[in-house]
Each structure stands twice: as structure tokens, then as C-alpha cells.
Length: 603
Image (cartoon, rainbow, N blue to C red; front, side, top):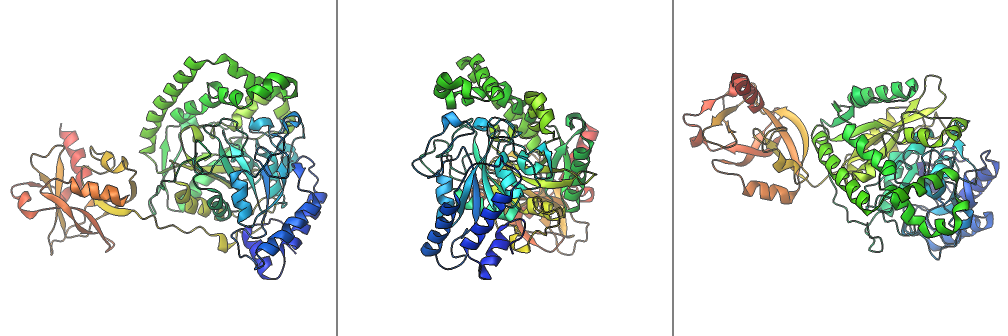
């Protein structure tokens, strides 16, 4: 018997034990027929077609688990093309039969996955709540009175209710994250351009992203890796430039008091507080940051010229079929007519100005952790005030694609009554997709809130996401390259990441080098000297950046092995002994930062 939630580990184990894809397909067919939510699918794959696809897979690859996703059932949001099933974007008059699979679907099928149907969505992917569809409103798997989240509504519910192992969504403003939070799932939102959009009906083409709903972070990452990769047919496709994060001493930015907004939902507020404490218990350093520039960027997506991209996607259809639009969706898209080319450029200028402000906040933190949605609503509440309440859902999600971020949404637990779930999202700069995953996985595992509707399910060890080797070069810095110091930009500029703050071994001494601009220290090692060690930072940079960095180091400084207080040895700044003759020693201050602080007090 298969478990309630069809995670990859459970299905692979079932296949190893002798079950076949046909057995799994029959389970899916039975569960689909028994489902009490009639709005999950727009077009389910017909039963006989599902059986035929399972047979075809076993003929193509007879060995169990011989393909990365062998026999894994998945659902597809109905703005993503699947050959043999119509694409509607939740608008019957828009329906058409695609000639081929979207790139992501083709890659997943080639890996052995089986499409079980096309899922419901907020029409033309315009919404975060799941009620804007003529095919009905999917509901939270925990209370049918509450919204499922959107626009990838049916996709999230299909996974959370045990109909599919994973599902594809799309995310422009948070559609791949908000439904995950409302259904106790993981939502993987890749960096824009990492996963190709060929065969996807656009919402805002320049910032759309195909996403994954999964039971675990490990499952979601594995699926994303199958989908990703450059596709020249997508004008916005990019080759990945992976970015790392510190393996230890991870700095997590959290909301400060001024930006703390939960629209009166004390349950979600409490769960966010608890998530912060769990992150701290996992060894993270918690750092409040100013969310204001991120929020102001988020507001541009619906209250700025980017809404014109939604009109660009459907302008010809709107001109002839305006009556076929959901009234709220039509209101939003027709609002784009208020913007002209001048407004588009002005919006771009504002976004770039805000991007500069966010860079200052990224200097404080390695990643951000935000509430995925600050609250939730019943279907009745949403229908009564569809634009304002939908906007509440996007308060902490709308900025992510505009600012070129990667994100992983994970469950944060259930409210005090054990009734409804909430979530938090870990957000990193571009191409931190892999680097985010280990901590996101750890956050999910410490929660013990199950997977999807199965609250007691145990996250399998086989899906654990290990800390990946990043191929970067560590370097110890002691002076002007420390965080906040004048030359720190030489590390951050090429994408360097701070790994930890620590101290040297006891036998190091520190001097102020005379005549250096900006002021720099000289670090020397003196065997037998018994000090307390000196404050330093360990950073990681790409090999290319490390080479350029070393080449530009001025004499009398150079690179040598620095021994840290834990006994490890890492390349770092050392000084030639002759250069400290007559120089002021500051070893007793404990480090360069303390010296600079002392100088500022004296000034």
C-alpha cells in the first residue's frame, strides 16, 4: 500500500519492492476519483491514457528506477503545454491544443515522469488566491472553507492531497510559494532564467518562473535539476552561475519592527517568530534588516507598469474576447492601459534605484527569511474583497523575481488550534538555488509537521540535502577587507561570501602599517608568542577572483597559510617581517575592527 503523500523516496522504495508504474497509476486513478475537491484539475489525463503511458515507460526503461524520475506521477499547471492535453490558462475560450510539450515537461517525461493532468489556476496566472477560475476554486486541504492559494492552486492541492508526487506551477508574484504555505508543502522558486519558459503562457514574460511543489526540499531540488538548463528558444533563459553561501555562521535577515505586518493574524505572526528561533537553534545569526526597499519594489508588480506585461501577453485575445475574462482578472489587465512607454521607463528607473537600496541590506545578511504569506482568508472573504486581500498575500513575495532572487518556501507549522498551516520563505540572491537548499531542508526537518495533508508523515532521510561542495576558494582577511571596511567590496563585488568570523591561533601579532591608504594592518606569526588570537573573517571567492585578488595585493603584504584557533589552515593575508619595524603593535586590542573603533573614539 502506498503512503498518503507520494514522495520520491517512498515511490522508489515501492518500485524496488516490486510495484510497477502501472500499480502507481491505478492508485492515482482511484484517488483522483475519490477526491472531494472537484476543482483541482481542468483536464485530467484520461485513465486509459495514463495506463498507456505507464506501459510505454516500462517498455522504454524496464529496469525499476533506471531513470531519474522513473514512474513518478506529476501534475502540470494549465498554463504550461502538455502534448495531448489542451492548454486553457483557466479560460475556456482561450483553449488550444499544443503541438508539443513545454521544454520543462519534455525534460521531465524524458526522465521517466508521468503526467496525470492539467491543474486549475487563477485565470492567466493573475492572482495569489485560487478563486479566479471558471473551473471552480480549489480549497485548502485542511479546511474547504479556505482558499488554496494561487495562482498555482490545483498544482499545490494535487500534491498535498496525495494525487501527485510533485506538480509544476509558475511564479510571477508568489504563485509557486503562497499555495505551498497554505497546504504544508515545499515550493521551489528558481532564479529567473534558470528554468526555461518555452511552452508557458506568459503572465509577465520578463519575470515569470516555472516552479515545483513537492513534499520535501530534496525532492523539489532533484526535480528542478531535471528541468533546468539553457534553452535558446527562451529569450530570458540564462546559463547558471552558481553562487555559494556560508557553510557556518549563516546570517539570516528577518523583518524589523517597522515592516512587521500580519494583517491581524497573530497565528502566522507566532509561527514566524518560532521559525526565527528554529533558525537560530540551527546555528544561524539572526539579523534584522530594512524590508522597505523590497516592499516598494514589490508594489511595482501590480501597481506599476509591469502590469502592462500582462496585457502584452493576451492583448489580441482581450480585444476579441473581453467577456470571457474573469471580472477581477480583466480589471487588473485592463488597468495596464493607463501606462505608456514613458511610465515603463520610469518604472524601470525606480526599480533600479530600489535595487541599489536593497544591496545595502544584502550586505547585512546572506539570505532573507520572510513569512510566505502574512495571513490567509476564507473563500467567502476573498470573493468579497478580491484585490485588496489578494494583495495581502503578496506582501513578502512580489519582489523576488523583479530583484532576481532564488527562493525556497518551506512549512512553518500550524496555528495554535492545529487548524491551518503557514510557511516561511528563504530567499537568496541570483543563482543561490542549490546553496539555499541545505538550510531550507534543515528548517523543514526540525518542524515535525509532516508533509501535505499527512501531518504525522516523517520526512525520509534519503531526501536529505547535504551541504554541497561549492568549488570556491577560502581566504582569511584581517583588516581593510573585513565586513564593513573600505576594501570589503573587493570580495563582495565578484560574489564572495563570508563563511565565518573566528580567531587566529594564539601566536599571531598585529601591527598598524604606516603610510597605507586606506589604513591596513600587518599580521605576522611569532612561534612561542602566547596571545589570545586575533579576530579575522573567512570568506570564499571563485578561483578566478582569488587569482585576481592575489595579483593585486601590494607589498609588503602577501598570501600565506594562516592557522586558526581550531587548528585549520587557510590562505590569508600575512606581512613581511621587515615592514613592522617601528610600527605600532595593536595585538592587545584583539583585532583590526577594535583598533578602528578605538581610533574613531579618539577622533
